[in-house]
Image (cartoon, rainbow, N blue to C red; front, side, top):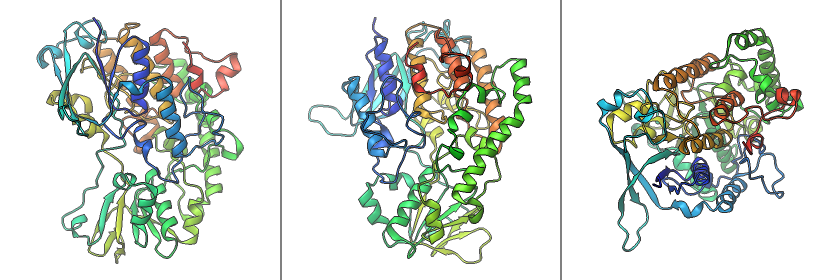
Length: 523
């Protein structure tokens, strides 16, 4: 009997999940559920660049075309590359465009019965279990087609959630009474609303306005840069930030590729890894001074090239913490030149509130007058994930303890939720790279190549990864981030699938050369 697999989301993870489930003989249904092929890459902001260099941002078996010579392609080139991938592997015909998934509901054993299970699915850790459970997916059409109902329910055997984290549900800061956006006479929007505009409309929207951008990650930096392009120093853009970050100008500190410092087996010998033995743990402790030296080496390059000391923007934490907390981002070219000329003003704000004229930063006596505030404050990916489920029990399960890692075994499977996987929620230095490996791992699980361990063993493994995340990201801990621990993580996936985890030729290549997508092109 053919099993029906539903994939929610037609972004990068959704396309990968579609391709690899097809390779195992399944016929997936892909619900677009967001903004078309490639998801957020449909945005046309002129300054947007890849956060990771091209060699890391590619599919394992689909090289970039020779016409793209840049190390950091722009958003148009990225979108064309993703669309070409979808067309090359004939994935588009499986996508239901113009759809929004409203909810998913599991029809099967009761919560009490599932609570007594020792293995995922109730039987031996197999993908489909033996309980004949099904998922009901309530789908709403976002386009009107004559003769086609606006709302439909699909019944499937397995669900793959590829909805991402950085869209749809904005993270809006909370403000004390009478200090929120409601008292402000200007306009307040989230960066998601700004990102929905194309470049020309966005430029007109901010033109001749005093703009304040809240945040200091990639969206905030790009938005501030665009505002400075539109208004110059006549109406400078103010950037409010809480914490200085190691935004990188390039991936070649002092001309040496960053990948050799953080994406090789040797670099991972310098950290204590989840589930490693005593000898590897001892070696990591002995080599910790080298880990410190790598971090200082990169920091010195960033401080020198961006002149951070001049602008009071030297972070108090290490670059090693930054990369292990998945906070690393690329600063727009000439960003600090704009700071020097006065078209971008950087203002540290431990907290702030609104008043009629603008924003009042903690410690200041007078408000900063502004016409428009853009909140580049991120997204609530956990709530987005949680809100899809009908079951209150599954809502609690999927998010887990807010002070611990999102409880996904191999960053994909929740031990207590059967016949469901999550791809693309956990971050890394290169999300496409890790998402592709997860999709290959999942396709092998669906095909019955291997079985999952017991629920207790999976939960124990999740706990070990949580310890690693907290150890190296400290106060910047992110619940779904494997940082730069790609090789060790992919080793676990390879072993599960029965692959040789060592992918290089020769001892020195295996130890010192960076790992990338093309190393996993074949089993």
